[in-house]
Length: 211
Image (cartoon, rainbow, N blue to C red; front, side):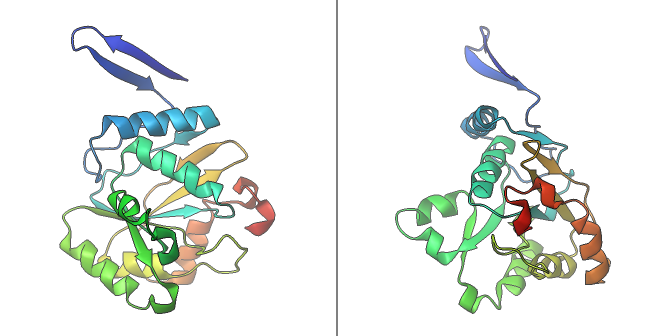
């Protein structure tokens, strides 16, 4: 439940909520009151909540799944605003055409042309190595359609940049986003993928048969 009260001493509106946590200090974030209000309010109206929290780390790769519907972006973006997370996240270049390009970039979107995406991993690793704090958010399935294997870009970025991977599961069955514990890649993709995959289940997806 979201509660709001006026604090007379400051004359400001204060939010008290357990629906979505505040991020730990080290996590890249935007100190924005309106983002918090929009995210918390939007999730409350939709009946969603965030369980757990992101690790108190300056750099990591955040993977979000299952991805079977356009609604995944809406729910995820509301959580992104409510957490006040500052992250780079990849979208198809066609999704950042005018008039959405500047707005998307303002919120961290990075346009990717899948026909020429070969250097995305290298560029991401270089950016993360150069940054003091950075989170990269990816949907490892790479599509809303059912896939047998995830794309390995997220894993390669984490391995080459030497950062952990954190899971964010979209659970439509219980209207919650579950944030997992950080995992340091071992260097064995098959083993790491099998471990990460346990954070997600088909029943969580909006369309379970697509995951």
